[in-house]
Amino acid sequence: MIDLYSWNTPNGRKVSILLEELNVPYNVHAVDITKGEQLEAEFLTISPNNKIPAIRDNETGVTLMESGAILIYLAEKYGQFLPRENRIEIYEWLMWQMAGFGPMLGQAHHFLKYNRGVSTYAEERYGEEARRLYGVLDRRLEGRDYIIGEYTIADIACWPWVSRHEWQEIDLRDYPHVRKWYQRIAARPAVQRGYHVPDHVNQIPQG
Ligand SMILES: N[C@@H](CCC(=O)N[C@@H](CS)C(=O)NCC(=O)O)C(=O)O
Image (cartoon, rainbow, N blue to C red; front, side):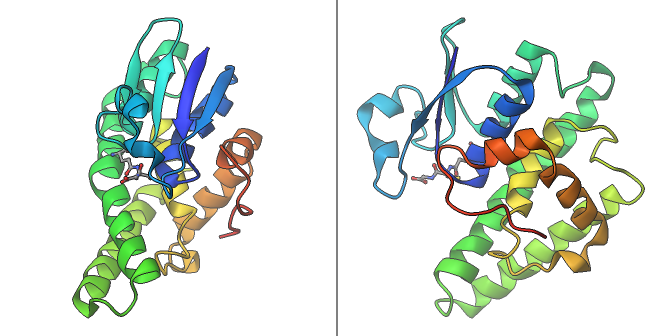
């Protein structure tokens, strides 16, 4: 059994969506990051960077932080969503998400949604970077149903960030390939289940 430590955020949802897609049993431990529960000593033994998501695999004793590492671990363990022949390309787009798409969109949330008016410079910088990154993804998805052609952990890593497009002040109609891809993945029952972990806080945005 896998223990998942998570909260309703894009990084947390990546892991619950993959677990639902894999159809493996898991226990959910809600870590309320709005109350500082990620700083508690017990959680730090699993996630030394005090961030969700994290897992404990009770079968192997492995504990892991960092959503990208967790996606790779679970995909390898269960032999799905990381096909050997496309592995390097999947890592390429997974790293793009982990190092660019996620962190930059996180800054867009910070300055555009939560701190409007604090810094015009930061609003312009991260708003522009968000639009640039959506352009990169849109060009990649032209002529492809999924980032690597078939549905993999690269899609599972990127999709929850796109589900917050409203926070980033992104109109998906400006990125038609991203929009179709977003809606295609939103229609998957496992994604609909994984999105609402640990709790149902809102409907999946339409796009
Ligand atoms: N690179 C990490 C980032 C994790 C992350 O930023 N988690 C946020 C929620 S999405 C968090 O736990 N924030 C609480 C805090 O910063 O104290 C990953 O992908 O797992």
